[in-house]
Amino acid sequence: MTELLFAGADWDFDRLWRTYDAVDLIARKELGLDIYPNQIEVITAEQMLDAYSSIGMPLMYKHWSFGKRFAQDETLYRKGMRGLAYEIVINSSPCISYIMEENSMAMQTLVLAHAAFGHNHFFKNNSLFRQWTDARGILDYLDFAKTYIAQCEERHGHQAVERVLDAAHALMSHGVHRYPRNRGYDLREEQRREKERQAWHEQTYNDLWRTVPKAASTVHGSKELAERKRKLRLPEENILYFLEKNAPKLQPWQREILRIVRNVAQYFYPQKQTKVMNEGCATCVHYHIVNRLHEQGLMNDGALMEILHSHTNVVFQPDFDDPRFGGINPYALGFAMMQDIKRIATEPTEEDRVWFPEIAGNGDPWGTLREAWANYRDESFVLQYLSPALIRKMKLFEVHNDAEAPHMVVTAIHNERGYREVRKMLAKSYDVSQLEPDIQIVDVDLAGDRRLILHHHVANDILLDENDAVLVLRHIANLWGYEVRLIEVDAETDMTLREYEDAVPTVNMG
Image (cartoon, rainbow, N blue to C red; front, side, top):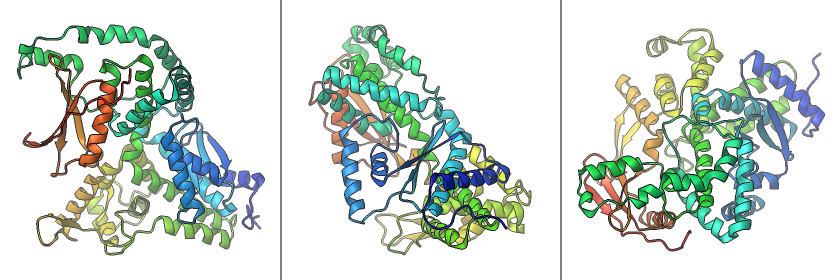
């Protein structure tokens, strides 16, 4: 008779490692997962709250906003108004999984399967993470960043460093390169950069600011204008990068802090694009593993029921007319699509064979999933794999909602044209370029008062929140050192929709 891995809720490290080995065997042998080495950290609820506050990263530098978030989360948790995640997992090598000591042994099993194997495999193999992040270098880089910012506080004062971090954090979502390949984090290179910042500063931008063109060259379309934009590499959507390289008044240490913040932002960029896939992968993996442990007699009915209760809560999707509805649950959609892919690979219908001829009936569900996990992001994954059967099951449809019309109109129903339209529109909702405003630096008035000019290319008539925009412009002006102007223009016609009053620096960053 097979011996249970554990019985009851209590856990110890011996049970934890025996369970880890059993999970590892299923993950590698049956699912073919390829993972980074695992590092399991057992932490308290308070430490989990602390991890929340510092965006889940170990060795994170200090900032007042982290403490504010900790206090808020702790208050809600202590009052019973908010639960805590069972785990946090870090995209690093080794892959660090934080599990709470308050968890039952059943929940520790779920966490090991979900985080240490599901998320871990996705981090290591998905093309976006391979392109944009350096799992082996991130921990060393964060250690460098934490030490560097602490040294800046000692040399320049806590308030001066905080001002730079405040401004950089306000621009974090506009501090990523969307297209070129990330070269990773080389600690020795970062240390060398720190020592050579002043020399680099003199060599690269002093000449630009010394050679100010004449007023006549500001005429639109002139050669001088084109040359100025070429030197400044305009337009530029990575605002933090532009300010780091070109802000005339920033000191070398301030530029390095901007670089640190945008490197952290870049690290999280793939996670914005793979929420459905990443959580769907981890949920699909843990669901299979815990059921296999039960089938093999390694887990009793009570433990499985506890895990499935948590699993059901995670993948619950309220209907559109349910008061709890808040959009599509990424866990629900990701898990449902991956279970559907397994069905198509093993038990396809004639409809599946028409829509998915490459995978229907191929008899290799996990190989099909591994290929999808490696090569897609949320937008393309939905566009490629969302099936008519799942659209019907989840009751998905498209609604055209015109703010000026008295009624909403259902524009895509359950027919062939409707399936394609629903799939296209749902995929579009995960396109990061559609979710975040397109704001670019387009020019600098070098001949006059060095005003920085930004354009927001407005899509779907959605303008920026005016109060938030004014506050962020003030941060940009503080970093730039001169006035900043923002113009909102229609993305299709270039017609000016709104022009903000010039923001002026309120503090002297230098």
